[in-house]
Amino acid sequence: MPAATPLALDGALLIEPKKFGDARGFFSEVFNARDWAEIGISGPFVQDNHSLSGEKGVIRGMHFQVPPHAQGKLVRVVAGAILDVIVDIRKGSPTYGRHDAIELSAENWRQLWVPPGFAHGFCTLAENTEVLYKVDDYYSPECDKGLAFDDPALAIDWPVDLDAAILSAKDRTHPLLADLPDYFSYGA
Image (cartoon, rainbow, N blue to C red; front, side, top):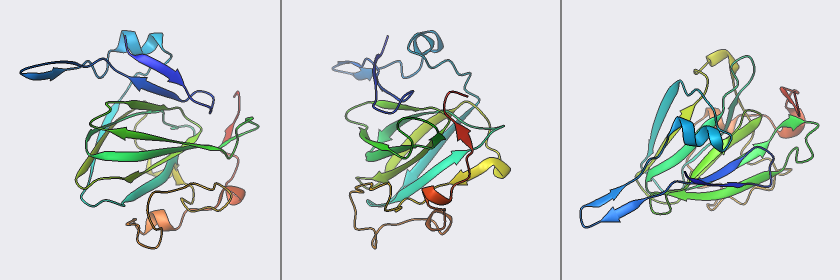
């Protein structure tokens, strides 16, 4: 069973799967439905996503899907490293508008569980970084939303000069937290 550490934002978990190495390399169960359910991640997962960012300093996010297709994400890095950031966007939550930032890398082998109700994004810390994540609902273009990565109210300390960051045009146009509709309610 993996080690699971609750983060300051209720529902988010840092997961450390066991990794067994020898002269051949290593082996790790990066997902086991029974074991992950025991730590509170029950799925079912319906889609796996894989991204490659060629440059250091790529920011992807802050993304989320709204109901009826809100997504939970189980995120891990298989090459390179990222600063993974989540923001609580559940209205009424004691941690509404707060964020947490965790380094995930191929070396540290950690995973992050991002429940529905959180905006998610990351910044690459190395070239040729590959991120894999499982989601518990299908991609839905009409439910696909975002939050401004550079919202001053969030005070995210991105590890890159924001003027030099590499982003998609879409990720540069997301609304500020103050302008975000109440898509999620805490405890609902």
